[in-house]
Image 1 (tube, rainbow, N blue to C red):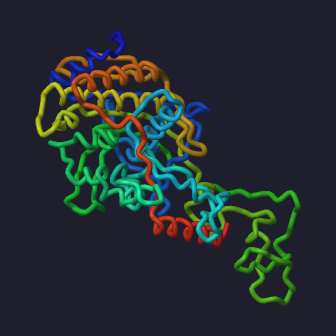
Image 2: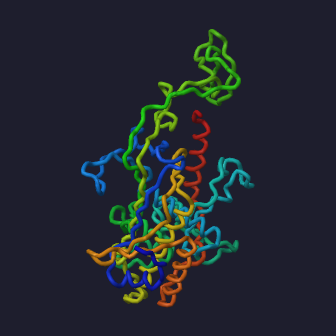
Image 3: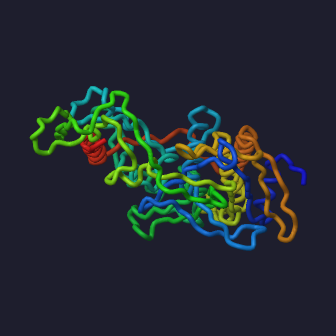
Length: 422
């Protein structure tokens, strides 16, 4: 079947005509070639997510291993949008928390500065998007300036903009579209807001996963970390809490091997070594990997975008078209960034991304090609159409500053991390 170039007309018609979804399935192989090992993520209990799945054309279930979860894929797509935003390729609403003035090189007293630079955390980076605790525990400048010329600060969720999150729903998604449209694509639950479990909940419209098919999981890796200085384990050291180790007297109590201060040759895995260390696993070999991405138009079609209390089919369709284009853009840009999931898990696709539109049950889905540049152009066209319909959003990033209690929590956590063993 021949592929077409995806146009704004096709996108809008898909929203109007009750199409079900866009999907993209493609096969991947390890960058080292078929049969090369890949290392899946480890989960609680230091295990891989291995399961039996039914596969097309196979009579029996196939052993599979998850190589990248739905949540991880969403994070990669949001990162791709953040990079495109930073490069000036796209514009999307953004809320950011600026930790910059508290950097280690700032002029603030040492007890107020962070030990390690955090920089800026945005709503594209926060795990729970606009409902994340990082944003909740930050403040925004709002109101008339005081005698000192400075605007007062209020908690973000009590501000005019942040307070809108208390009112959003599927039937009234305008404010979330204007402040954080990715929450309408990747999902969000405002469970830590003032309504608790009754907080606004939006299901994922864009779901992606990478799975290794026909997986064979190996045993523990065994080997030796070689020390070029040939330091011997028989020579003991003292390892005080401040890590300022010293040579131990042969009769000293509490003396430990030099490996405890990262010297000498060390066989692995050690009995007491963390089992979550990647070096402890042999990885897995697979027949191939598959990335399956689905963008549900049914989920997006449930969203309404009232303006001044009035709903309009034209505005609703325009908003859904923007979200569809944004989802396709996020997925396409992430794919063009490459599928380097983690150390020793670099995958290479067997062909370009081809999107299928599930439009008419029983008929073959139409196929569309889409590059990153084409996806960006499509997204910009959709945004222009929404603005023409009267549906605008925030063009300038909304800047927040962390509350002092959040700063203290971060600084003390960083201090604790410096005390932890290597």
